[in-house]
Image (cartoon, rainbow, N blue to C red):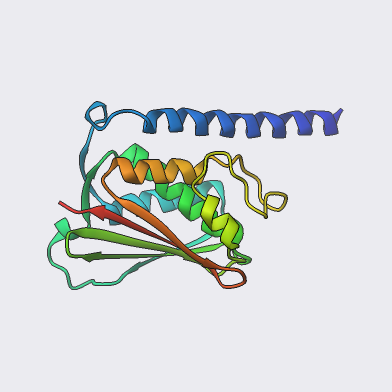
Amino acid sequence: YRAAVTAALQDARRMTRLIDGLLNLAKADYMKEQIKMEEIRLDELLLDVRAYILRTHPDYRIHLLFEREEADDDRLITVRGNSYLLAIALSNLIENNCKYSADRTSCIQISYWERWAVLHLSDDGEGMSETDKQHLFTLFYRGSSERVVEGHGIGMALSQKIIRLHGGEIAVRSEPGRGTTFAVELPHV
């Protein structure tokens, strides 16, 4: 009976994560005019996202690095956006770093360049094949590690959709055995 109840609970949690992912995907399909936008400091948002992830995954390690601490103008790391949706996108990227690295670590660099606030989210994990990189942002695509790491293939497509909804871009750099880095650029205020 215990094994059956445990299996049912695990199935229910997986189903809840799938439903949450699909609902968030539907929210990201709203038109920009339908979404409440406000000024958001990325450093503060990342601290909140980090705290949330560490509560649910205490074995993860998330390091925040500020590339240019001498900047006096907070607007260089402030974006106009929806904090709920941006938190989902960043959570997906950070959790992906942690899930696919042996030491469960994500290192996030915050910087700016010209009109962009720039985030680099890196791990020293197994990296991705060229095929996996080409399909990474395809909805329901599960890479070659699908048997190793749990998921539904929604997170990366959702993250890309949210970043683009905010006028930004996302790219990935990865090599097998050398880790993965997501580069996110969002226009600052």
